[in-house]
Image (cartoon, rainbow, N blue to C red; front, side):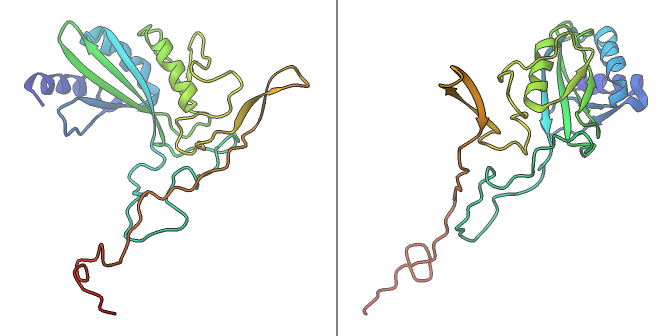
Length: 232
């Protein structure tokens, strides 16, 4: 981390006290985790007091399986390791809640005046559906980015002027970038001759079981018997 960024980090930490927490970095980039309820106030101050006049991107993150190793094995398998086969059910019942640190939204900021970049990360908490304050009043460019995060991850942005799906169809069910979303989706479209139009129906694609790694134990691969000659 350069001296310029260390100075910026110290100023931000002093200015916002308990509202932000610095995220450790191994690549020299500055990121702060922001308390959900403080997001709008912190973002406004970051723009006005620290000259981060541009919001260049907003992205959602689903930490559902973060840190879990799904592929590590030394055995062959007949059923496969496909992430698309075994999934937890998609949560659609609003009586259920999420893990407090499952969903996050990350804001990428640029200060043209000072030639600095900054990231803010906010966890959505246990709310189902996830909800954060919209930052469109702070940076107008958040409009499109927040719609994308809503469409792909199902995060709602309170105060957004026109929160609609932007990449999927109006009748699409679920949010494709969630880790528990089935690879084949929930519904598919087809032309209904009786109705004379395109209609939806439950997806008919059968999940495939993929085997990405097969370990063999014959003499082609076992160094102990590789050069053994079979005289029989």
